[in-house]
Amino acid sequence: MSKIVIVGGGPAGLMAAERAALRGHNVILLEAKPSVGRKFLMAGVGGLNITHSEDYASFLNRYHGGANTLRRALDTFTPSAYRNWCHSLGIDTFVGSSGRVFPTSMKASPLLRAWLKRLNELGVTICTRHRWTGLDGHTIKVVHEGHNKHYPYEKLILATGGASWSNLGSDGKWTDILAAQSLSLVPFEAANCGFVVNWSPYMASCYGKPLKNVELSWQFNGTQHKRVGELRLDSKGIEGGLVYFASNHIRRTINEKGYCDITLNLLPNLSRTQIEKKLCSKPEKKSLSAHLKSKLKLSPAALTLFNERRHEDVINSLCSLKLRCIATFPLERAISSVGGVGWDLIDDNFQILPDVYAIGEMLDWDAPTGGYLLTACMAMGYYVGNAV
Ligand SMILES: Cc1cc2nc3c(=O)[nH]c(=O)nc-3n(C[C@H](O)[C@H](O)[C@H](O)COP(=O)(O)OP(=O)(O)OC[C@H]3O[C@@H](n4cnc5c(N)ncnc54)[C@H](O)[C@@H]3O)c2cc1C
Image (tube, rainbow, N blue to C red; front, side, top):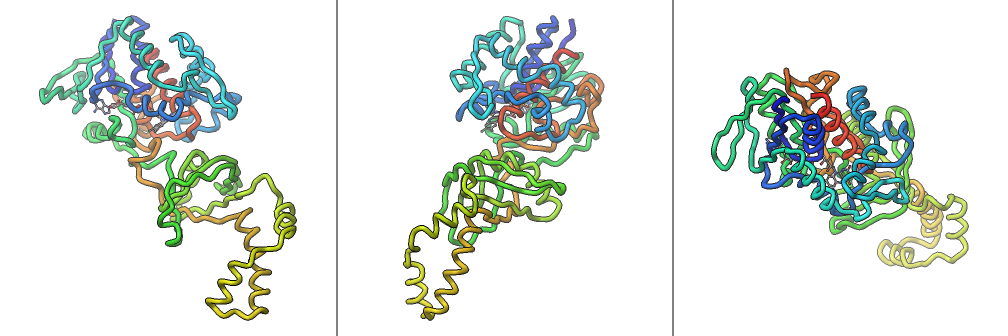
């Protein structure tokens, strides 16, 4: 029986604790916040999307970074194993129309409650308000209510999360501790985030307007990508599920070129000919023409020419509206982050230093929303909890 210390009480750390305890180890989990699973609970606010039901090969293709190491973890805790694990906690799941998998209650709290009860029964000790502050040989330094404490370990599992939504605990401050061990980390960036668009001043008062059933197309590495979904417009740019899906490619293009051009089709269910027919079938309202005529004194011939071109422009704007994304929204409000511990720093078993392992969102990988994030965090916890 080894003494295993886990730092971080998110899904990755809790899963590692469960697996290590099931193997009979003495497990202590240290969490900086007054309670564990805060981001997990937040993930449940709009409906906890635990995983995705698409075929496993397509599922694996959603991940960027991590290569074989992440893949090995996912193979040991597949989406269907994950669903079975939920069922073993008494939490039923269902597949939504988009293939996403949710608990029947849609919430995270019943799952977390059942999980903590299991961990308690397995003898896992959870110490909240315990902030990890340093590493010294096989001992970690912790601050608890203003007092320094030391925890010796035989194996240490770090699961301290990424660097978004810092009020929930994942503040990325642990990077200083690892940097002090001469580990060179990858700077954090926003992932599953919105993007700043070079709007005109007209958009200044636009706030959170949903745009449903639109098609987003973008290019990455010479390949054209398309997806239909929903996004939100605001005064700074665009955000929402459809944007998150493309966010890895958009962010990397911005990093390379300084901007990323994307195209929206506002009417993906209609062809250009169908739109043209519909527009021609009704006489066009004259309000803009009248406005131009009175304000700019356009001649009837100039107006005719303008309306002829406007007809074409209207169709172009509806079917292929070009937007230029110039920056990510701030890291703090991103659903997840990339960066942190690079894959070159860990071995095949997620070991970063002798007897020290790193798992979850603190590693440099990315996947879209849709349950992929939680599945990978859980899978890494499962894999490393077994391996130690
Ligand atoms: C609004 C929102 C909605 C989301 N929805 C979904 C979803 O539907 N589906 C999905 O798959 N994913 C979703 N996610 C992402 C998912 O919640 C995260 O990817 C996941 O929680 C990361 O797990 P983790 O265990 O690696 O890190 P975290 O959950 O961030 O946990 C890390 C823990 O470590 C603790 N910690 C940090 N530093 C220290 C320290 N020095 N000492 C001690 N403890 C420390 C933190 O307090 C925290 O509790 C969502 C995220 C957000 C913000």
